[in-house]
Amino acid sequence: MKPKYKNYQVFSQVYQQIFDESLYDQWADYVQRKIKGAFPSGIRPLRLLDLACGDGKLAVRLAQAGYQVSGIDLSEEMVALAEELSVEEDCYILFQLGDMRNFEISEKVAVVTLFCDSLCYLKDVDEIKATFSQVYQALEEKGLFLFDIHSAYQMNQVYPTFHWVEEWEDAVFTWRSEQVRGENTIDHCLNIFVQEGEDYHRYQECHQEQIFAPDVYKDLLEEVGFHTIEVSADFREEPVSLTSRRLFFKAEKG
Image (tube, rainbow, N blue to C red; front, top):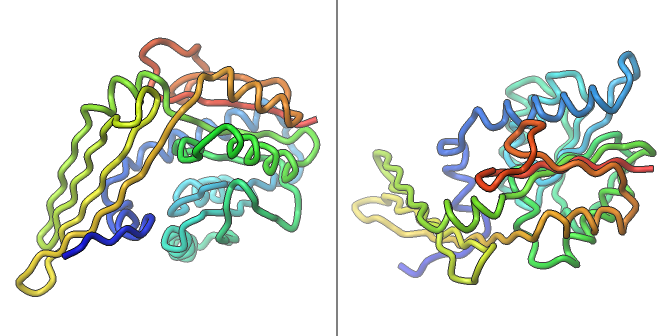
């Protein structure tokens, strides 16, 4: 059977089963630490936008922590999962389809989050700058922008040897990461073999990521108006090291 290339349609079917749940708790903790450091206590519940919200698990955690949360994602399948989860968890969260490079919201927010290395899926610095500009416009004065990317160590040392196989009763999922486009890039090749009657049918996707030097992101943030930019590593307020896996950025508006 010819592979079907439909962005996230295959991945969304297994996403909730293979993703490390503890990462959502770490992202939520990181967000709350940064919010507490940036805003005085006792003010109204903060409005928060979770860009590239995926299946909504982070958005739900933040809503349960008391924030007024909305979410945007490019994938119709992921938005559907997010809406289902918010109903299950009895959280009122507005989820909508949208592109991080060009989105609209009806009311400015105090905080924008963009996690799970979603920014790494953009193809060049122009798209990154467009995203930063959209975020800047969506934020209130003194608003906070929080995002993460993969580190050079993760992209160039860890991912090129990454392979994963997951088996279920009626399906087999494989994930192979290859560095075929050069340094600081990675291609994730996803396959799922699904039993349909007596046959197994193969569905395939490829997800491409790339990163730039941390100073590139800092310069682009400053170009669109952000200031007080901080970079730390691995969910903690620690300096970036040669073996850091994930880099976190905090930037302020106004």
